[in-house]
Image (cartoon, rainbow, N blue to C red; front, top):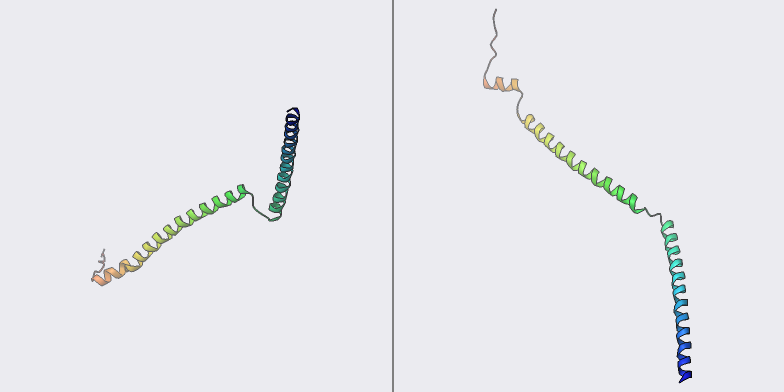
Length: 105
């Protein structure tokens, strides 16, 4: 019985050492993968997230301003069309047969 117990102890130590070794290998592989990915991203000419968010906010602000100005232009065009449809005041008086009375002093 003593040999079986010792054999299990030795197997447990070997298994524990293997787990420790595998954990070290995993950490090494993770580090290498991280370095490769960082190098790949650096060479890909990608924009950092904060810069992207800043440009996105600027674009949203510009779009809102454009929509506001489109509304203003539409209102001005409507006013212009309404005033262009009316004849000038003088022409309206002549068409109605009104004459301006002159004062005589």
